[in-house]
Length: 257
Image (tube, rainbow, N blue to C red; front, side, top):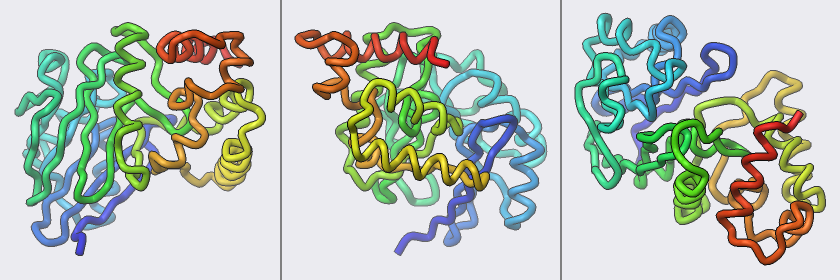
């Protein structure tokens, strides 16, 4: 039986905060640290003490809370080794293929260059969860800032190999705008239509849309569906490689209103 309790909440304008507490050991991990004050409030509300932070990448909206949280809790901060000099108060540098041990749970590290050059994700197979940061979003993917489109395509494609029941935790609440773009390139996808309606309803009630699941994303996320005949027809890219279709999707999403 799992001893993990998850708390998911918004930080800043649209960042996700995620806290996981292991009730057997009392250890608590934060996925990134977007806002120290909000995270502290959630910890205090739960009666938890922060022991670890798992950092996905160096952008300020993911590490801004590091120093304040470390000052209060003396927590251990882990993050991508190739971005270590950009991550405040980092203690442990990790990279793709590494296996971390936290509260008796094994966490695998996935290299995900594209959004940033050193972006990583964290996969906890025993709990069927993955923390994708700004690589893969619900119905979308991250912008390509530092890496290449080919790198981002390969990074996003890794998630297709995870079990469909794997819960996907993302870095931002972007699902509403992602759904609108997805419908513009695959309007005939019934799964997407149903998902978009659900997302609209949830956001209208100010409810969160994450976590999603890998299965749900495979059925509706255009960035995982580059082989879709409808998407290829809409883009006028029949016969092109999946990588080129992905790049065109990302370019169109960058300017989508």
